[in-house]
Length: 247
Image 1: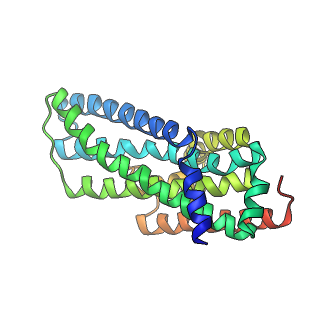
Image 2: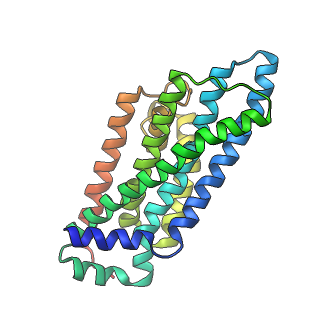
């Protein structure tokens, strides 16, 4: 298994996918945090919020890195289907289940890399943008918990993307479905039917990074929902992998 993990780890760092998704994550994080700082500047001046709440909100804006994470995970698998390399990977691995497990483990490790990137840049952007707008940083327990929540969902987004990649297989379809579900379906369902939408993966992740929306799940329950989605996706991915042709 060690050799398979080493091979998949090298694949994760080969090509341009990792740095393109990393750059996308940085761009989204900076875009969100700059907007959060601009809004906070206006709200603090009007008395609608305080420095502690504004600090936590800017940290929360870095949840957007999870989009780059889930896309990386989906591409990590689906690009092998597009190039035809998946058949060779299965042959060299000796077991389809072993290959699925290896890619999921390596995907989770890459999720930690994306989370580390967010862990470094989120506080840096906080001090940078707050200084630019002439605001004071007031770090609190809420900011710490928010940062931990962001790091958790960024990490888990990659194995989620990996499992979706196994299920969908096609690279273009994987990217399209991930974007549509992440950006539109989960949010729309939550707005229309919050009692159902709060159990989607995206909204459950929002609860973990402390998005203050009404009717959201508690963090422990949200983590259970996320785990349930991962288990369901893992079971579905393995079922399809062992019963369908690999080509």
